[in-house]
Length: 277
Image 1: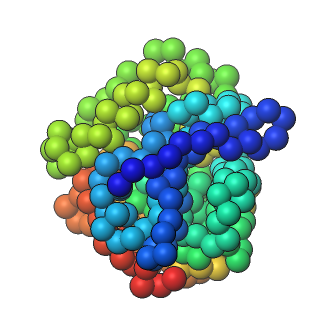
Image 2 (image 1 turned 30 degrees about the vertical axis):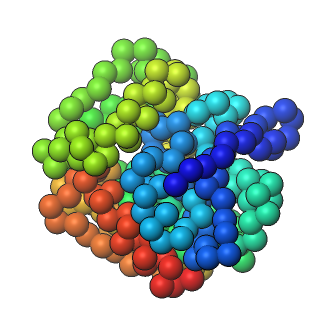
């Protein structure tokens, strides 16, 4: 499946770099993909394949500071809703579903909460939950230091980025196998995003650790939460917290999956959306 690239203006000279596979008369669904942290926003090959097989129009974009999109330090999770609304308006999209992986999960939920009547369903895969005193948000994370720094604000998170190193212990053996094979394009894209600088990841982490700017209880569309029980980056407790607070949520707990291997469920999650919208 091929796609076009365009820059969508969102005011004050800011732009969001956007990718669109386009639609035809046989399209079953339009799906806006929210990328993980860090990624460029470009659609990854397994997503393109799964969407093409189902007649899905796939739209994705780089959040501010990713993939050529204009930086916006201080953005919160809720801001993704206005960004996606601007993209949808530019592409002439009235109704669409959203799906997000890892750091994209909260942003997909923001759209579901804040764009009623436009978002028809949502899926998160290994998605982060809001930080709260209701449970230990960091428990089960193999490398929580970046998010701990983010609690202190952007300056503290940026200072941590100066010495931050990748920790391979975050991944299970099944994750590493996925990155070596079927999700190799995701790993390559993450490296590309990281080479462009840390600002996008810094802003994501600060947004995750701060109030999100919307209430999970306001989501009134079907939501599917997909979680690997062995995930060492976003622990399974995050999915349980979300399940208890999103009114129409369902949970698929994947007993043998981690943070990357759980993405193999994407085709099934697309089918789940098609059946419900």
